[in-house]
Amino acid sequence: MGRVSAPSGAPRDDVAPPPREAPRTSMPTSAERPAPKLDTVALVEKATAPKEIPTALAILVIVALSLVAGLATYVVRARTGTTVEPATTATTTAARATDAKRP
Image 1 (cartoon, one colour):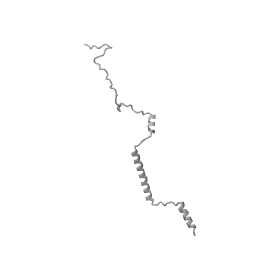
Image 2 (tube, rainbow, N blue to C red):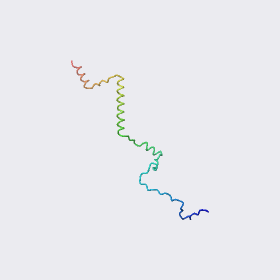
Image 3 (tube, rainbow, N blue to C red):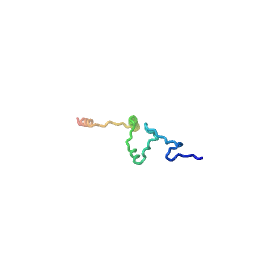
Image 4 (cartoon, helix red, strand yellow):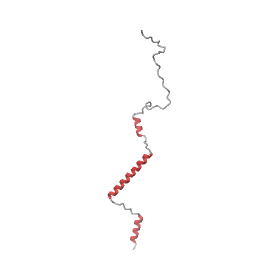
């Protein structure tokens, strides 16, 4: 014999009700977060946004570049072998001129 089904308006015993979702009390996980927008405007805005680096890294970069510049200057001057003579000043030139005019 066949199985007798319940009338269309009555609940059936062999079908479980759909599970109810628990209310969300915490932050959504990464799988539940919506994906970031990847359209052209969003990519351009992200690319032109100001970049920030940690202060310690910025100081390290400045010190390293200063050392490299100082070392390069030292090497160039050591290889050329020329010495830098102090420039004559106006007072030195004037003193020599007045000394030369005296008899």
